[in-house]
Amino acid sequence: MTRAHNFNAGPAALPEEVLKQAGEEMLDFNGTGMSVMELSHRSKEYEEVHNEAKAGIKELLQVPDTHDVLFLQGGASLQFPMIPMNFLPDGEKANYILTGSWSEKALKEAKLIGETKIGASSAEHNHTYIPDIHSMDVDPTDTYVHITSNNTIFGTQWHTLPDWNPPLIADMSSDILSRPVPVDQFSLIYAGAQKNLGPSGVTIVIIEKEMMEKIPNSIPTFLRYDTHADKNSLYHTPPTFGIYMLNHVLNWIRNRGGAEGMQERNNEKASLLYDTIDHSGGFYKGHAEKDSRSNMNITFNLPSEELNKTFLEKAKEAGFVGLNGHRSVGGCRASLYNAVSLESCEALRTFMLDFHKNHG
Ligand code: PMP
Image (cartoon, rainbow, N blue to C red; front, side, top):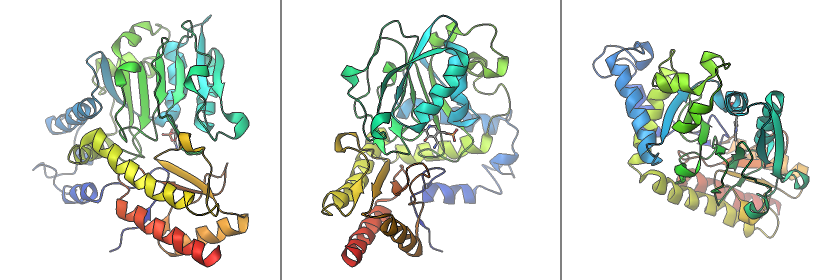
């Protein structure tokens, strides 16, 4: 059996150790005579997994007691409308910082619900950079400020996370637990698990408890954060298998030095590829400006469309998966989430060097 060099943008690579363990536990999880998928979500065996995963997020991200951790469904996409529904009342204004397609989608949903403003945008430069946080139009009267900490499609990442006065909300779908973050600076953090933390189907929400006091009575039960917080994310049937896999991935992260360990590992992986790009004499050209580069999604182009195409074809033949750029920007993209190995990055680097030699 050979495992692919998987650079998918999400769902993405999972740690081999975790997949093996899940395989071993598939027919008999913890002496229950069944898989986790077959357990009742009200059983003691499942509840242990559920609570361990929640404690794992709290520990690894150092979530303070002022915040709660929720496991929801509907992906990050359901958070786009849920956030303004819960937190943007009539007569107030939410601030959206636009650094890519996902921020734009979040704004589009908020506009359906209430008043918004754009505190900064990199759209005019095809989202090649993160605007300077000191020159953003952020005001203490903004109801909240929404940012996207890593821009999956364009390959940019916020390297300094702001500590603003209005409540700060972040979509961390594509960089959660890839590095330490000051959770106390955020009123809400959300992320689908399917890039850095597990399979698709579970959305992690870290929410400041005080925020939930503001939710109007008119919001339907299921779409209110406090419904899920009050019931320990067991208000309805949670995505049990996803949470079980998340728990295994969290243990895998803990065994590799936690958030700091991931940061070190991810820096090393990304440097290998950015160095290759920077030392290619312009053959490979990165999309993002250097000081805004993402450690998660490396976006680049070759000198022509023709060469992009040949590169992607040859890479596929050589066993590399998922290197096509997003359909909206084209070119190439290598996603290096937590579980992507250094060996896969080294193999890609070698492939890039050889391709340059043969086609440069
Ligand atoms: N935000 C970001 C930054 C993303 O990368 C994605 C998915 N690629 C989404 C939101 C949408 O996530 P989902 O598919 O879980 O709704």
